[in-house]
Image 1: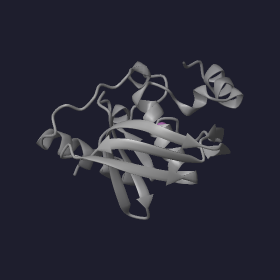
Image 2 (image 1 turned 90 degrees about the horizontal axis):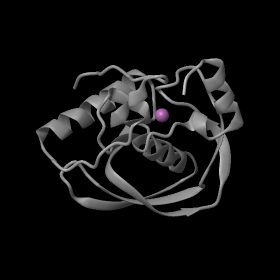
Image 3 (image 1 turned 90 degrees about the vertical axis):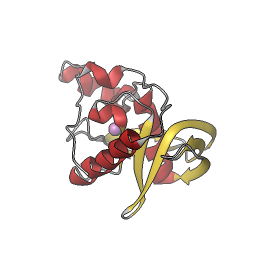
Length: 158
Ligand code: NI
């Protein structure tokens, strides 16, 4: 496993829509391993491939302490409720603000071998899942609140 450089706010790559993963091969495995290593090094709880500069629909989330879930080509199939809580992002170091997210989310996705699975999450993990799926669509948490939009304005970034 190797760590990769994190793409930060202001880099236009973060605004691009990631493409579906179609090849479930060794290079996908290496990408996922490197994403996990990078997330651990930076003390994050979730990371998407775009954050290491790869525009593919792949995510790694720490769902329990030192237990990681790899999520490929996710689709949200159900959400419930709404909770507002603090959020941050490895691509926007040092900034946190309250963001509303669904309290519950259900997704369908694939694992690193292409095998489909369902995953349900609540509260903090549901928040992570939604945050990371937003990344795949070029959306950042600072887009979602007034405080976040102010931060972008202050820093002259989009
Ligand atoms: Ni993020």
